View (cartoon, rainbow, N blue to C red):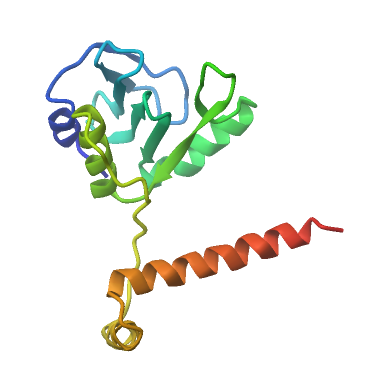
Length: 181
């Protein structure tokens, strides 16, 4: 999980607000810090952490101009967080835009992906909106897939991305078909 130091570096040590975290899913010592640039079309990055252990529970990056919100939750606490969202019966959205449309979170799984996006948002730079997905292969699988990518005249990353997209589309189509009764 990301550290307080990494988050502080992303926001250039600029803290604008702080408060106790109002939910129970992260325990009694949860505290939230915000770094807002003061522009309603700008950005905010937040961190929720434990004041006693310094363990980070969750970080968020809000790009108001592009209406994007990214969130990285400590894997140990994802289920507790999701349960509290459900128990509170709230819509898990980042904010509602001026047109009344919900701006949804994009949940991330890779610390470096969050840091890259958050740093770009803070520095008002373009960034890759694709989500990094951690994948693990044995040495044998890696060699096999690299050869397959080579045979298709594509990079290994392109090959893996295409395979993931294909599987996601299959799962999405299967899920949608289940409800077409």
